[in-house]
Length: 166
Ligand code: CTP
Ligand code: MG
Image (cartoon, rainbow, N blue to C red; front, side, top):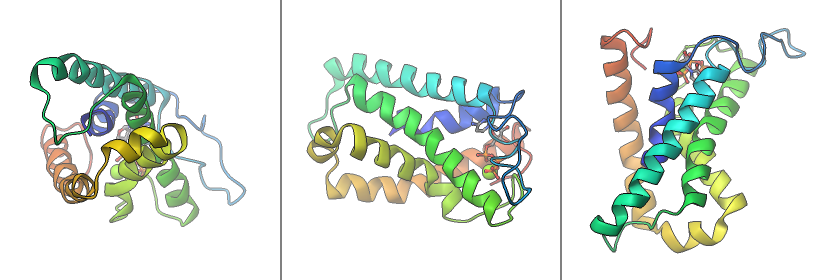
């Protein structure tokens, strides 16, 4: 999951500049995605996720653990891209229900990356998904994700990378 976990904090660190929606509004006169989703964040975030995934692939030769999924380039790319695609889909719905950029939306804010990553895997590499993600692995992901999310966001707030601790 590291290729899916790294894109969000990287986007928070490196993001800024032109928003993905170019500042445009939807038919409800609210922003399509909002200023929290930028091209720079998207690009550096996905790049970081893919880079760490390839590092993992490199290390798996020496450190492979049988009960862990076997990473290949395809799932690495899908996990990294899926994480931020999920994040953008969440922001799209968040704007439609009237929640402002940066406001809290429990559950969705924490699991958007998991949903995005898994939808991408299910669509583009279902064989890998079925062969590698067992029920116990999925359970660990579902428990670990909100804990890591909270911890990293508090850290981001303390070091003043994030404006809010969620
Ligand atoms: N970020 C970015 N580009 C992205 C995703 C994130 O630049 N594609 C940066 C933004 O600076 C954003 C920060 O990372 O404010 C934190 O991301 P997130 O919490 O997902 O965004 P929010 O500002 O909370 O916006 P939203 O309410 O739409 O989730
Ligand atoms: Mg947020």
